[in-house]
Amino acid sequence: MTEMDINDYMHGLGTGARNASKALAKASLHQRNDALLAIATEIEASAPDIKAANVLELIKAREAGLDEAMCDRLTLDDTRIEGMIANLEQVAALPDPIGAIDEVRTMPSGIRVGKMRVPLGVIGIIYESRPNVTIEASSLCIKSGNATILRGGSESLRSNEAIARCVARGLIRAGLPEQAVQVVGTTDRAAVGSMITMPDFIDVIVPRGGKGLIERITRDAIIPVIKHLDGNCHVYVDSGADLSMALDISDNAKTHRYGTCNTMETLLVAESEASHFLPQLSERLRAKGVELRACTKAKAFLPEALDATEADWWTEYLAPILAIRVVSDVDEAIEHINRYGSHHTDSIVTEHHGRAEQFMREVDSSSVMINASTRFADGFEYGLGAEIGISTDKIHARGPVGLMGLTSQKYVVFGSGQVRV
Image (cartoon, rainbow, N blue to C red):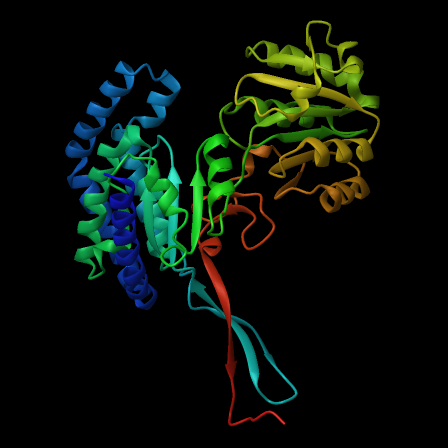
């Protein structure tokens, strides 16, 4: 397509999505849940077709030299398809996120003022590699009464289109417009540029992918963006902490999964605990193949570690590498986190109530934890049922973005004939 053709194509998707969003906003909870369960049935029936499309993409990906980690994210096997079906069923079982009226107050004039939760409208979602995101995003948007335009990675277009056909059939079976969920059918990057500059059709953009993608979207979009750039997460082991607990939390936060945005990348340890704690941690992490990069004070207890540089404190490794710094106290730990962190997730291991409260108040992150692994920063673990992404923004949604994060509120006023004087 030419650039003009792409703009026309994207505007066509936008018009369909805007119209569909009006039907979704009026749809009953029963109808939206019926759509999700119908889509689950369609996915199950079409599993062979989905896997066939995916196999072709995996062959092409390996021929193009994509690494195994990328190929793994791209793969749709029986287990992942079952997970997609389970996701749809779980979201269908969640409470209705829209229509609730709360914070109702009676004012001196006699009017009653409250807030009603409503859909955002049309959500544009841009993501890479993982075709199961197509179902995760679709399910959350349908449940929350939003239409969505999905732009997946070029390497997964066949899989995304096969899944989208199931979604369309499920929507139609529930009496909802198939344009409620649309997959962008071109791999041309100009489609992304058009998508993020269509405020008449799209109300919010959610990018899911690498830092480069999210930086581009954030820089060029003229639509509000819900995003986080990276996950440079910290654990701070406080003076007097339970060191057995600290070992388990630090180990889990680093090694449970290396490639996630809530994995610990820097460990901070109070000076009073360094000599006891760091050798024990080193023994455990080195057995798992984790490379340690330590500050000068930490090196005294970790002679095998590499020297940490200034760049290490800024880095999200997404790999078996851990930066370690010894700090004097909680004040220095907080100062380090607020300077070098990405405002994602940070945790303190402590037995001191006052320092725990200080850490909660002063660390400027979307999730702040006490005596828990950073790996818990997740929509499912927070009881949201599912998440569409993580937000480190401070306006609207912050932290894991579940169904409530895909809604807004409007004021509603109940009167009995009052007029203002």
